[in-house]
Length: 201
Image (tube, rainbow, N blue to C red; front, side, top):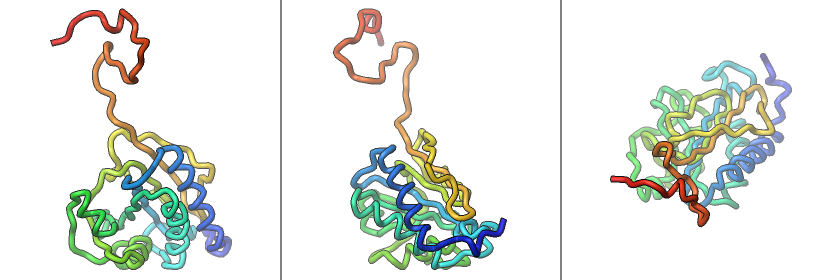
């Protein structure tokens, strides 16, 4: 599918802003929570991933994310391509505060990808980290962000399923539910006698 000529760069920022708002609301994202963002700008333009990325497309996606981040306060982390082992761009103060493993490289379009390269150059103190456990994630172009999500991932269906030629998927995460048949997952004053009967230990 070649959609290069039909992609309106100005509309990309608006579409990204819309889906980021949907995800932030679904995941109740707030200050200091991580949002991992994987992007193939090639796929957005209708080309095979890793073949035709552009900084101009990355700039539009970045603008859409920033429009929501500036209000909500989450920490965006941008996934690099496989040539940098899918490391992530983040601002260094956040990385240090969260105790993340910083690694040494500077992403460029041919080794890191256009999105990561652009994001790196927008931050005042950028760095790369090897991995994160993000609270939520957006994947634009099937770049596979699952390795950087907390357990357990819960899919969120965006109202916009494609941006340009790129397939869009999103997820939030929730804590693991532990225990067996006796386990209770919400605090309530109306716990029944049956639930409280028996012993443990």
